Structure formats: C-alpha cells, structure tokens
Image (cartoon, rainbow, N blue to C red; front, side, top):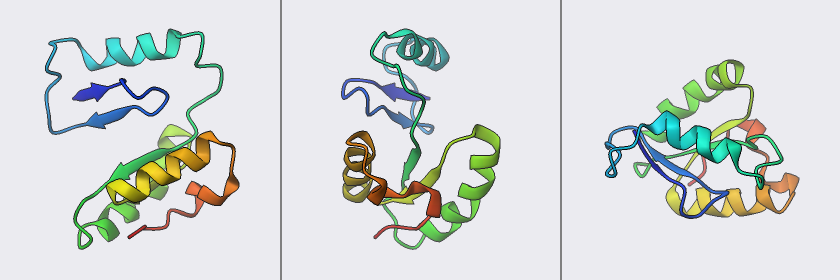
Length: 104
C-alpha cells in the first residue's frame, strides 16, 4: 500500500500501488499518529473512485467500513474528495461524510 503524507493532515493512500520508498505502510501510519499535530481522531475516510460507474459499488461497502473502523466513509471523485476533506478539516458539518453519499 502506498501512503503519501506530504499534504498532511490529508493523507493519500493507494491500495493498488506499493510504497515507492520501501517503508512499511503501517510504519508510516504509526509515525503519522505519533505526530504532535495529530491531536484529533480520523475525521473520515474518503475513497476516490474516478469511475462514476463504479462509485455505487464502493458506496455499498461504506456502511460496513464505518462499523469496522469507527469513522465515516464516503466515496467521491478526486476533486469532490479534496473539497470534502477541506470542509471537514475546517470543522464544517456540510461535508457530512456520515451520509455515505456518492459524490459526482
């Protein structure tokens, strides 16, 4: 799994790509959790699915993921995901990842 923390607190993860630096993904995740800046929990997981046709299938799994991981999951296009992340980080409830909406 590839993890890109360069835009922290937005962290991009790609399950289909290996980590280019050879670091274990879980070690990277642990180092992010250890940062002093990380004083609040994960706000949401926003899965980017470029294919509009595939988003509904990903949406169907979002509710199950919330039960497993304990935070909201949603599915969106790349542009919509970044906008949602910005709203969440700004403290806006307008992002509302709890509704598991598939965003265009």
